[in-house]
Length: 218
Image (cartoon, rainbow, N blue to C red; front, side, top):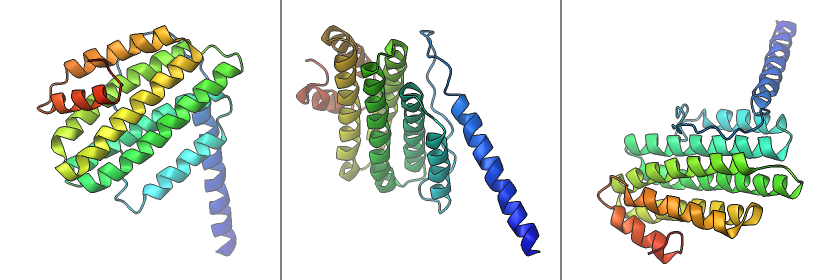
């Protein structure tokens, strides 16, 4: 029985490693300039579950098998979208405090995506399509966060605003560093238009905060 257990564990390990390599390969496609509709992924296991650490472990395996900076940026951007979906689901479950803390993980994943994007650019890689994808993602993320802001208690609102601010400023800095200031200004206008069209009751509070922080213009 002991030999069977060891064999089963070995097979499971090989399967996980193989799947991790295959998953990494999905990130190897060169980014394109095709316009896509950005949707949130399924939340899956939530941070309030004891199984959530298994999901984080699986993500570490994906990182291990993802090699270029462009692919790493794509992976981190994908995981950031998942963190947003998880936070939104936590709100639906009536756990705003956990959701607020979880938004820090969202910010960490985005910061990693922006860092890898800049590193790829420094090595001479064309990251224009990647930046375009990050922009589209961020506009969707801001939309979701605005809805979350409407639904959380006052004690958690600061954390949501901070997530909106930091994620947007991080991308604006990355755009400035890898493209040019004109491109950053163009994105700032896109974000302002997005905020103007938020269908939320507290959008003016969000707009005022982002204006005070210089994320969007008055």
